[in-house]
Amino acid sequence: VEKPVTLEELMSSEDRSDAILFLFTLNELMSMIAMQYQVLVRNIQKDRRQGISDTAMIENLLEGAVTSNFAIQQVQQLEMELQTQHEHLTTPCRLLSTVFMPEVTAKADSILRNHASKKCEKCDIIS
Image (cartoon, rainbow, N blue to C red; front, top):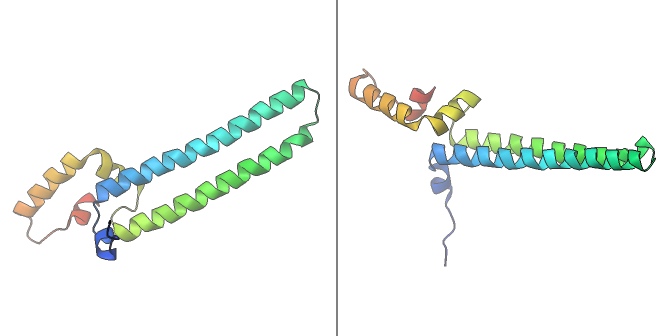
């Protein structure tokens, strides 16, 4: 039997893993939007070949708009959750450095911890 994740465990999750999951989810949402608009284009082309009025595409446009709005809301929610867990991940640059440059961040962390006059947290180093 799996035990439920506690709030403390959730809040202490690793920033790099959470950033990667955020980017994967963002990619999935963007793919969903792209597919919706590809369907729209195919349907418009098909309707035009069949001589159907362009007004028939309104339903497809609405579906695309709904998909886009859903994705925007999801990204906003995910972004808020990510920033709640990891306050230093506030910009795309910080997010990407956490994901793609963990060795550089670790090296800077090591140097600062050994030579800084005051204690630095990892989030201070990334920012």
